[in-house]
Length: 334
Ligand code: UT7
Image 1 (cartoon, rainbow, N blue to C red):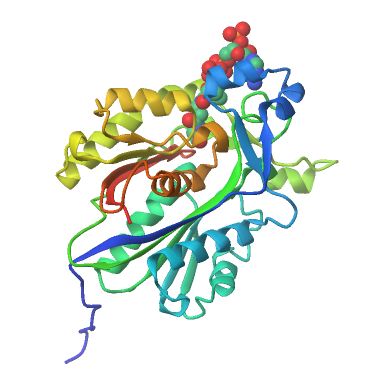
Image 2: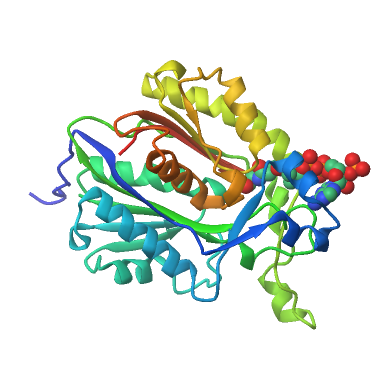
């Protein structure tokens, strides 16, 4: 008989088996970024909650940071690199259209048999990639998937731009997703509003690099208030939808790990979700800044390593950002 294909054999569930983080060495306090934007430590803390961020040094490349986080996640998971079938790298700050960064990450971590793909959904990228990894593992296509969020946002920032210079930072976080007897990654609630592409966008596109003299560096610009208002409405709404989709109540959560955009957004969402005091709320933004696609795995790793949440607990993850795009799911912590 022709036309019949053999399909992968599905497994009962997928879960996060391990998590790892890489934080650049250099800590940059508000006093260092404030003068170029005529700001102050007091203003930055009051409007964003941020006290410091990390900026990567010359040797801390996007690929090296992503690889370091992935190696730690594999060690935590107890999974050998050659058992990895797929590497998904979420990033918005890889400065080459080609080649993608994920194949280099796969090579560096020793996942030489893996497919490796970059994925762009800006600050929501990690939660999108995690949902895809869940599907790959549950469908039986991949046994182990490394999911990385890595950013060098300092490459994209205009140090003189008041709306972004103090907000963003660098780093990488990673998880390993593998098979499980029961689902450990809930259904994803995701969406995008492409009617507002300019809310977070590069000041110049590739064409300006060719035609303008001198060519401008395509730094990032953000309509801060537009994004802020969208975020404080969107995060609790999609968070509630993700909880309902997973069949979990807010009171059953151990942790709430939203994208670390701004402490005011984190706290507003935690209040709107009516989280009981028993739920640990990730506030990594305070001394890490906004690390875009890296922020959710970085914050998750910190809650676990500091003991604020424990293995086996349930965490609500919500990514959101440029697009405008969002993705949320409930996961069992590794
Ligand atoms: O990661 C992707 C998703 N990103 C986000 O979710 C970020 C969302 N947006 C934000 O977090 C906030 O909009 C910011 C933290 C970026 C800015 O805070 P804000 O409270 O929205 O400030 P604003 O832009 O409304 O500015 C308020 C005031 C203005 O002065 P007036 O008009 O009230 O006199 C600004 O001129 O603060 C002034 N201002 C500053 N002052 C000192 C704006 N930027 C600065 C600055 N330092 N850097």
